[in-house]
Length: 179
Image 1 (cartoon, rainbow, N blue to C red):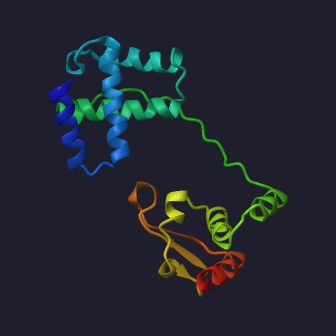
Image 2 (cartoon, rainbow, N blue to C red):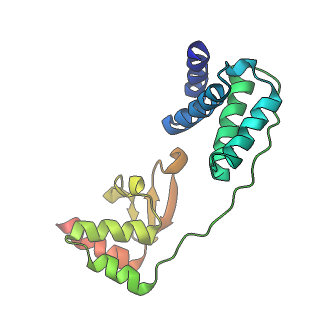
């Protein structure tokens, strides 16, 4: 798949896809090619649909994982190969609510920290609903104490957003900032 892979990679970069998206889309098309031991540009729509069924039924991949594969394959056929829209069905993905810790569990988690830094980072992560990658990039200038907001720059999907800054988190961040 050498030349096709390079073309697809070029198309992904041109459209500003994140490195992880590039990796996932390329892996989806590579998996398709390996499954049939054939160049993916030679496959028929029915073969691609059968491959998606294989991913769901034989490999037992989660619907959301198969959705990523569908998007990768669609990208390959419509953008890289410039073929008419590829109408592949998307498996329904289940939405799960996040698990919410009880007050006692949160208290035990925070009590287990050894340093002021660890406590502040954990509180910011849980209290602000932040991802680890977002917490480690926080700066003092991202804290808006007056409005009770935290600015998260370049979070998931390279998007900026605001999240709540609780009063308990703010009182925890102040001593950490002074140290």
